[in-house]
Image 1 (cartoon, rainbow, N blue to C red):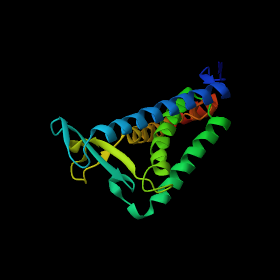
Image 2 (image 1 turned 90 degrees about the vertical axis):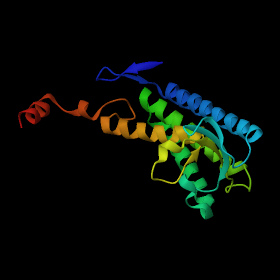
Image 3 (image 1 turned 45 degrees about the vertical axis):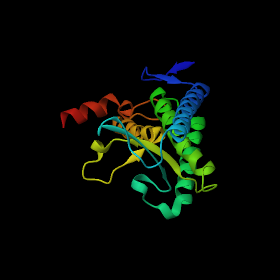
Image 4 (image 1 turned 180 degrees about the vertical axis):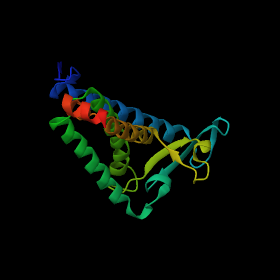
Length: 194
């Protein structure tokens, strides 16, 4: 199921990386859609339901735009961006990803994207312009900013985008190698001497 790179790091075969990404994406998608169904069935619309006082609340709302309801008039554009992001991740999964870390991060990110994309495609008011179901409200997180209400998919999108940045900063490539591994011993010693 796995192989070793020249730098002795474990990498995944193409099928294993693709399978891991698919399993994680479907798991996040299922969790997101299930929690949205439960929110729609059990929460009153636009009324705060305190769970832990002001710290954690449930608040059912429908978002036609992006974060903080920006771009409400161009919902279709967000749908196309999410669709393009999902296609890009699937393309990378099939052609380039062999790193376990990248497979995990991209699988969870894809699940989050698909969660909100499902709303955009299939919820009211219609295809491509559906409103995203948001219901998690943590007012303390947004001091000085408009209050944000989000969902399970949003949590995975934000945390995995941070994880993408971390992997890039660490120099980990899609194939599991690191940028530092490309240095020859002569290059490394000359850099340390400088």
